[in-house]
Length: 479
Image: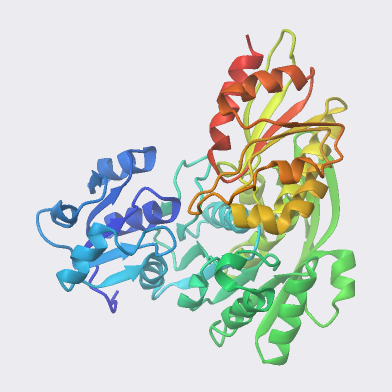
C-alpha cells in the first residue's frame, strides 16, 4: 500500500495515549520500526514495548534516536503536545516531517473501505460495537478506537478484511483529514468551543465532513438527534446518499431520510436492554449488555454501518449481542457481596458533557428500577474549567437526576486554573436529595461510605482521574 509519507521508521510523541497507542499497534503489525515517548510508564506503553517498540519515559531531543537512527516521520497530537517539546524542536531542526495523529491514521486507512464514526457523544461506544459486530460476521476489520474493548483488551488491530473502522474526532477538526466511505454521525451538539469559538463553526465541521464522503458512500445519521437529522437532510439535497437510524417516532418525523435501521421497541432488564430493530424489512432482536436507550441507538448505528459495509445481518446481530462493552463506558467495577453495604454496585463512566451525564444517569436509573432496589449515587469530576463555566447550569440540571451527588474538584487537564472557579458553581445549583462538595480525593471513599445504602448503584463519572476512585470505593465499602 503506497503512502505519501515514509512510514518505515515512525516516532510518536505521547505514544501511550488512547489514540497514539492504537496507531502504533497497527504500524508494528505492518512491520514498521516504531519508537516513541511519554511522560510516564503505563499499560499501553508496556504492551507496545512487548510488541517491539522502543519507548522513552520523558521528553528529550535524544529520544528521536532511541531506535538507533532518526525516524522518517514524527507524529504528534497538537492539542496535547506543546510546540516547544524538545522532540518536536529536534525533528524540525533535522528536517524530519512532523504530522498529526489524524494524518497518520488517514495514511493507514488508505486503500480500505473507511467506516468512520463521528458525533459529539458516543463515538467510542458505537465504533466498538461496530467492530465487535463485524468481527463476529467474519469481516476481520482493521480498527483504531479511543477505548479498550473489554473482551479483547485492545484498542487497535491490523485486520485481513477490506474495512477499516475508526473514530473521527471533531474536537480539533481532525475528522476533515479523512475520506469516509461510510460516515456515521451519532449526534451534533456544541462542544469544544475553546477550539471552535462559536456553535456555528462547530456545526460547520460536520457539514464539511459529510462533503468528504466518497461518491458511492453513505452518510448515516441518528434521526433521534435533531441536529444530526438536519445534517442528513441537507446532505441529501447536495446529492449525498443518506440513511437514518432511530426510533419509529423519529423515523416518522423525518420521512425524507430513508430509515436503514428502525428501533421499534426497547425492553429494559436488569441485564441490559433487548431491542426490536427493523433492517431491510426484517426484524432483529439484539440484546445490549450495557443499559440505556442511547446504547440501543448506538447499537442500531453499528448494525447499519456493518450492513452497508457488506456484513451478514444475522452474524452482525449475534456479534452485537455478544458485545461486553468498552473500558470506562458504564464499566462494571464490582459489587459488595455482604455486610453493611450488601448489593452496592460500582460502575465507572467517561461522561464529561451534560448530555452524556444525562444519558448515563438515565441508564443507571433504568438498571436500578429493573432490579427493583437501590438508588443512584453519582461521584462526578468536571473536566476543564472552560467546559465547567460554559455548562454549569446544564451539569447541575442533569446531575439532579441522581439521588445523591458528590462533586470532586475540576480536572483541568490542559487548562490552567481559573481564579474563583471550582465545582461549587455546580453544587449550588443541584436539586438532588443529597449533594456534597468534596475537594479532597483521599476523603472520597469515606464520604461514599457515609452516603451509600444497601443495593445502591454508585457511579464514578468524568474524563479525569476520578476513574481511579472506583477501586478505593469498593475497598472502603467492603471493610
